Length: 276
Ligand SMILES: NC(=O)c1ccc[n+]([C@@H]2O[C@H](COP(=O)([O-])OP(=O)(O)OC[C@H]3O[C@@H](n4cnc5c(N)ncnc54)[C@H](O)[C@@H]3O)[C@@H](O)[C@H]2O)c1
Image (cartoon, rainbow, N blue to C red):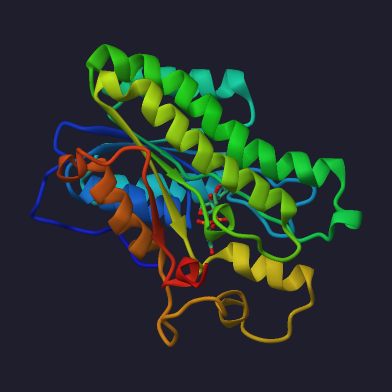
């Protein structure tokens, strides 16, 4: 998935960012990208597996390695173990970021999990795990970050949603429900905090190369390439969306170039949502 990015452009110099689910993949790509442009970054991750999620989540070792990689590229980085489903852990995490960096400018709500179940097979635990990570976790992080952003009269919040937040996908009513509501939360919160110079936007990725895809493939005993299977809706075929493609969009939404975007949902989905 690539190593640390280096960039002569330090547009985020003096800015600080908290990225949830930041120990790997999309979250780590975002952390590398913002850090390479001068931001101090905190990556928070659960570092344990969930009962109904059919693939391994990041470990403490992953988190430590990711932080070490960021630090070795010369940036200010910390790693925090945090389950975004737990209000107390989120509150402590945000507090730690403030203690460490003095402020919080950018929050990227990236932590997310998915599983595939038909409605009759969907247990309450599976429903709760997906909704609590994807939706309640974003609510808690916003709840504890926003008071600091209001004090600063500055903030950029980027929620990582999904194409599943725009349309129905098979075997995932829980994931689609969570991501649709993330988009609703984005719009409603944007209205609430606009007077405080806080922008709240969301990105809906299409299929992105990830351990998540491999886990889903094994859950349905898929015997062909997982990316190809799950990206059939893409209009642009033959090239794969990478975590860096999502990080590029996050960077723009976290920058002042997009200062008049708020409550906006940006689709980085190879045209999938254009199908309606
Ligand atoms: N990969 C895709 O195809 C795809 C497509 C659309 C949207 N997304 C969304 O992008 C985001 C990142 O996905 P990814 O592909 O990098 O997945 P990933 O599984 O590689 O990474 C997710 C990270 O979140 C962490 N995490 C999970 N539960 C957590 C919790 N309760 N608290 C804190 N951290 C937690 C995991 O340990 C992991 O490090 C998710 O919100 C996902 O729904 C992914």
